Length: 177
Image 1: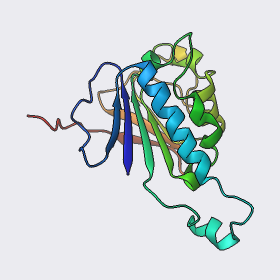
Image 2 (image 1 turned 90 degrees about the horizontal axis):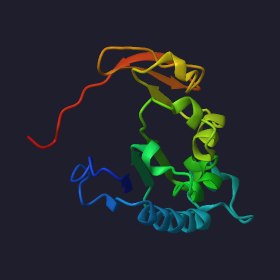
Image 3 (image 1 turned 135 degrees about the vertical axis):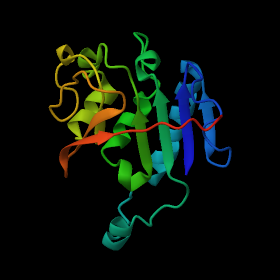
Image 4 (image 1 turned 90 degrees about the vertical axis):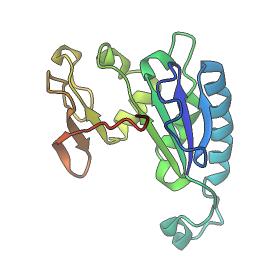
């Protein structure tokens, strides 16, 4: 795995082991360049006409590490001037096939309006799994028809296409004591 961390507030600094960290991106400009580069790699992983059915089934027509894009405070990353993750949108529908994983975290305030932003809209249209933690129900349905609601710390609803809605309890243990 190679992990690209987009973290404008630097709250995840040092949390990803160096062996897996491809890039720690703290500005929109850095993120834009890294995502454009990643999109180029993913484009080369798209199956061509010579790929067999068996290769498609086993995903063996390309080799290399899986790419994980982890974005903290997504609401700070997207701005009126653009979204550094936009180059990944064409690959989201085939993410499993090209080895792409995207993890976005954002505050719930304003999330209802943000769901129409292109990256979030694509993830929503693809029924990507998600967690809905505590928040205001006024935001409306965010993931799989689930509205946020006030909850105890760590209580969330995990929503997937296959399993539907499940209540889960998350725990946090700091890696730096």
